[in-house]
Length: 92
Image (cartoon, rainbow, N blue to C red; front, side):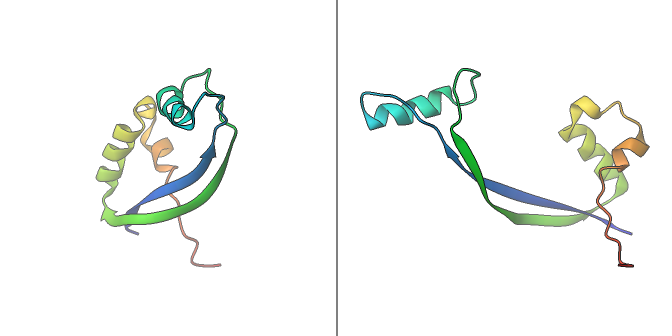
């Protein structure tokens, strides 16, 4: 059966609480400090995931893209890499 790569964008509502002299300073702090170990996230909620593209790919393209997107797993066996393919069970 053919393989299809489906690309999505996922959106989250993120909240941070910042003590600051002015509201604009709190905005700057979020932009500058987000991602640092010392900057704390207050909460998050998943809002939506939207498909923005899809196309058929070959097994070779899959393996090349797997290695590119998951460099830390590039040394894995082909069989293990192919284990990330989701298969539809049409018998159900």
